[in-house]
Amino acid sequence: MVKFGDVVKNANLVERDFDKAGIERIVGLEHLDPENLHIRRWNIPENGTSFSRKFVPGQTLFGKRRAYQRKVAYAEFEGICSGDILTFESKDPKMLLPALLPFICQSDTFFNHALGTSAGSLSPRTSWNALKYFEFPLPPIEEQKRIAEILWAADEAVEAWKRVLGSISDMISATLRRAFDREPNAKIGDVVKLASGKVKTKKQQFDFSKENQIPVFGGNGITGYTNKRLLSGPVIIIGRVGEYCGSIHKSNKDCWVTDNAIYIKYPSREIELDYLYYALSHANLNSKKLIAGQPLINQAIISSTPFYLPSIEQQRIIIEKVSGIQVREKIVREHISSTTELQKKILNGFVVGENTHV
Image (tube, rainbow, N blue to C red):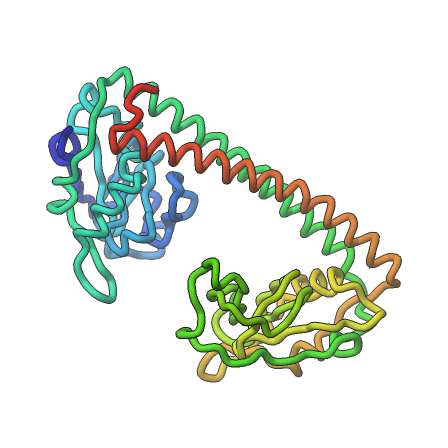
């Protein structure tokens, strides 16, 4: 067993002259994606910043503010980062393999330690002085190399599947554009009736359990579960208030829809429910929101939204095309999920000392 601070140092490098140092990327906490080691977004120095903490390739970046967001990244380029990001590196690569360090920081036990040592109510933060006392088993360097090789291979596989997922998403978008980027010949209100959900307070919504399995839909999808249904599926739900108002969801089973959403239960015989779902998704209702206190979409806006309505037969052809692509999308998501779960199992087993021989 070793203490984190015995084998890792908080580099804490400082750089203020970006031009002289040739630094072109500035990374804030918002640029780190939860549970993703790769930095895909950043700002540029020309936009200005008060940050001065420098990071270099090979270091591990850890978000110390709101650690429950699980933001860890492996630096693949040089840059400047927020003061809410700690920059770790191995004290001795012969003792701790640098390529293994980001995975240690991704482990459940490390995050639990970070959460347990965080202070502050609105924006809790942990600190290097607290994290350096985290203890974990450190196997010989050759074992570390094997573990790191497996974990990075899993990461590479997940990233490859995500690229495939992006291509599939583009295929779906292109199919829908071909279907709906035509001269509108109908309005949503011509073919459906809208209704508002009913109040269900947060105290009436629970985590999923044996007693509470009916999803409760609010302004942006499922907000909890209950044991009473308001509607039987299939139902299309449209977020009514909040930042994500206009978001479209579909429930094929019993559900409850709160007054933060609008629902469509019985479309006319002129339109297939799945085609209506695609039409609403493509309409980008959020861009039509009213802003008075908080963002809002009302029934009048939805009803007056124009769209292209072909024959039932043509609708079914479009549905079949999109559904076929979505089957492939589901398979890819399952690959990502299973690979990620395997990676977590190996990682967490290693950090608690259950599989130091891989």
